[in-house]
Length: 146
Image 1 (cartoon, rainbow, N blue to C red):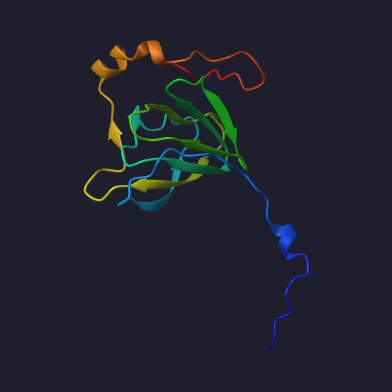
Image 2 (cartoon, one colour):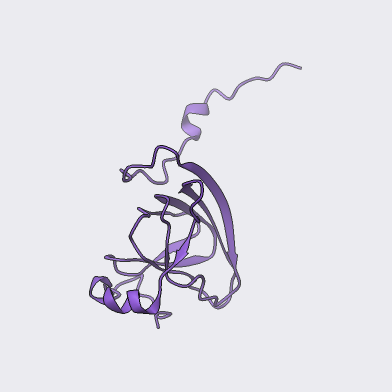
């Protein structure tokens, strides 16, 4: 059976995100995972990705996303996000909604022998609290911060 190729195939591409990531370790490998949180979930505790950057895409729901040095923001289904990894603290990956599930996909750079995620201690959070940016008023103001 011969397939007829779509003459509009070049128009099928939609750029969702384009960034200039930090350097990726030479021995890094990529890991793609999906994460599912129930309605109202607070997500993972503050952490970092020591192996390098992480690139994500929200499949369903709304992600409350907060990185060190940036105000918290809501990332909705169909939108992308990224984080540089390394020393940057990822404060929140919570479900911003109490009525629907959150599903997102993340591709992370990982270094063999290192965990893909490390938790941040309360002591370190306290010592770096000056790097945390408060929520900004506006259409994406979040009320789940706490």
